[in-house]
Image: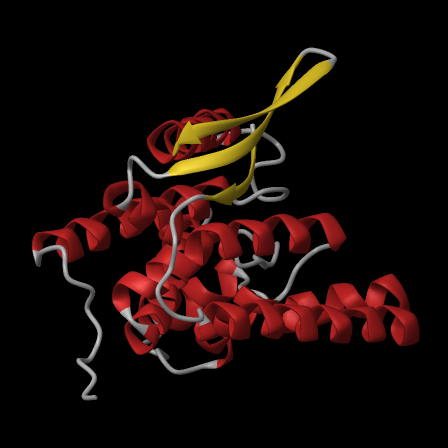
Length: 237
C-alpha cells in the first residue's frame, strides 16, 4: 500500500514543509557532488561525519558533552539520504502528511515539532543499538513523527493509495487510520525481527521510525486536547 495523496485540504501554503523538502534536495545534490569527486569512499566518510553514529553519540553524552559534533549530527543527519528511492519516498510522505500538520500547528511550531520528533527518533534507535558504528541518516524519524500526529489529528482523512493485489494494483481511498496503522505495524514487526540479527546495526533504522511515530502520537494527543482550533497566531484585517 503506497499513499499518493490525501483529500485533507490545507488553509495556507506549507512553507516549512516546502523548505524542508528543498533542504533535503540540496543536501542530496551535495551528496552527489561528493560521490562524483571523491567516490563511494568519500560519500561514506561524509555520512560518517554528518550522520549520527550511535557509539560516538553515546560516548559524548556519557562524558557530559551535550554540545558536540555527535549531537550536532542529530540535526544534519535529518537532511541526508542514501539514494534516490530513499529521498523520494521520504519526501512523498513528508508532503502528504507534513503539510496538514504544519497547517494545524502553524509554521514555527511545526518546525520545532519536526526537529524534536527527529531527535526523539534518533534517541530511540541509539537506545536499541548504542554501540553501533553505522551512521544513521535520513528524515524518516522526523517524518514518522508527522505520521503519528496525523493519525490522531486526522484519523478519518482519506488517503488515495496504490494497493497491490498480487500482479494487479488498484487506486483506492483508504482512511488514514488504516494506512498509518498498517505502516506502524510493519515497522513493529520488522523492528522486533531485527533485534539480535546480524544486520541489526545496519540497513533500515526501524526503531527510529517507531520512536518518531510514538512521539508524534503523544504530541498529537496533546494538541488535540487543546481543542479543534489550529495553534497559530490570529490575524487582523
